[in-house]
Image 1 (cartoon, one colour):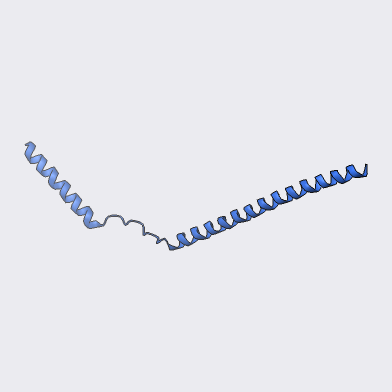
Image 2: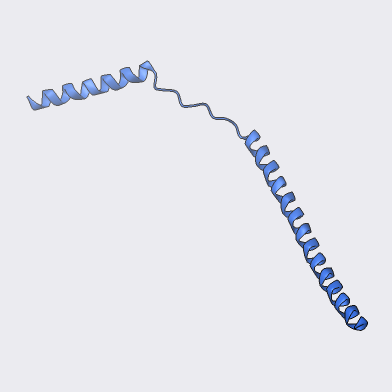
Length: 84
């Protein structure tokens, strides 16, 4: 009976060693993933700081409105004179 306990303990120790190795491997992979995530966030923050902020487009000025109105009025006058 004492021998069977030694065999069982040896098997349990072996399985625990394998489990610890697997968990340590997962821990290392997780740490590497966390490091890549931190690096990606840092790089994104740097890129966002470097991007110039474009000014919003300005609405057309009074001169543009006058030119468009003049061209429209001229086209209307020309069309009216040709139809008569």
